[in-house]
Image (cartoon, rainbow, N blue to C red; front, side, top):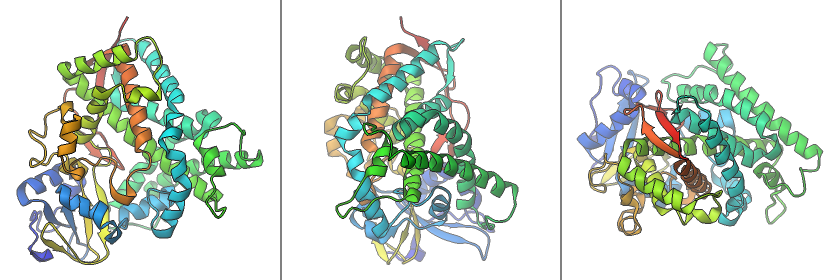
Amino acid sequence: MATAAAIPGPAGNPLVGSLFDLTRRPLRTYLAARRDHGDVVRFLAGPPGLRAEFYGVFSPEGVHQVLGSEAANFRKENNFYDELRTSVGNGLLTSQDELYQRQRRLVQPLFTRRRVDGYADALAQEAQALTERWRAVPDGVVDAAEEMSRFALRAVARILFGADVEEAVEVVNRSFPALGAYIVGRGFAPVRLPRTWPTPSNRRGLAAQRALYEVCDRIIAERAAHGGGDEDADDLLTLLGRARGEDGERLDPDELRDQVLVFLLAGHETTATSLAFALHLLAKHPEQRKFAQEEARTVLAGRAPTAADLERLPYITRVLKEAMRLFPAASLVGRRAVEETVVDGYVIPAGAQLVVAPLVTHRHPDHWADPERFDPDRFLPEAEKARHRYAWFPFGGGPRACIGQHFSMLESVLTLGVLLRDFELEVVDRRVALAQGITLRAAGAMRVRVSPVG
């Protein structure tokens, strides 16, 4: 058993360690660290006196320990989560302990499979509106990243807000990118200036936060003034407002807003990433594209998709899972060890910061043959059953696994099915650089030419 001091890791720059590598090209740095140093890696980042030490855990067994079997010992406590809480509230994504358990009890009934399947019609309508917009594009070239971000935002806002979708989408589309950049910039900065200082960054970030809070608070207040909304309404905001625990507990207005902001953030950026990269990969790989299109056109011929079609589109489901393997939206996940523990034979000290990295583990050569290759058949049932549970974990795992994963898969599979039914795809940007923000995204354009069928 090796102590923390013996854990291998990159030497980095003599003055700042791995700081520049981690801030400028974090994903490449983590991939190289696993390749060169193994499944537990020690990183040093920052100048003397401000130097941070943390550990990367990359094996499925280590990830299982951090997220699953010993999840209570690994908490959501670091600068990034602090900034996320301060910016978008303490909802399910960031809350802990009793507060998290209380929120989960109230929110979980709204994400049962039966409840989520009830949103299939709304998702199908948004997908149809997208195809109509694409048919009107003069040269047929669309930026898949931009288009999927806009689509996923409209879809989740419609599910959340119902009739108030247009007002919410305009504000969120304008404000979330600025707030996301602010959160990431502060969350990974060696020194964080007080938010009250009138710097340009603070002014931009806080203005974006105010705009988001105001639109959510206004819609919540209007619902409350009308008795909680239409009696037959099934949008998530109305259902959250009506949710009651066994002892009559409910979410107060601030908690409602926190949950809404978390669902907007997690529900649109993650799905957008998965759909955009799935389109990009299919546009680059004609053989896999042909299989997916044949399935979509056979199953969805001449009609709108329904929730039942999720089971009827197994190949498209595998395409999306493979896209999430190669380009997981939550590509880096941070935790703090409460007590000293042993991970993969190395002693991790109490208080240590850790990172598990789906993007790295999803490419681990011990678990994925030819890991850079796009191959949806990695997710055939027999292959999934034979693989370690945490070799693929785009939705996290353990007690903090994403509550919205069925919603995300339903939206992604049905939408991709509609697009493949209605369009031929041709890649324009074969190489796409990656950027790490709150979620993984394309650093530039991800253009695809879409040609209507029929």
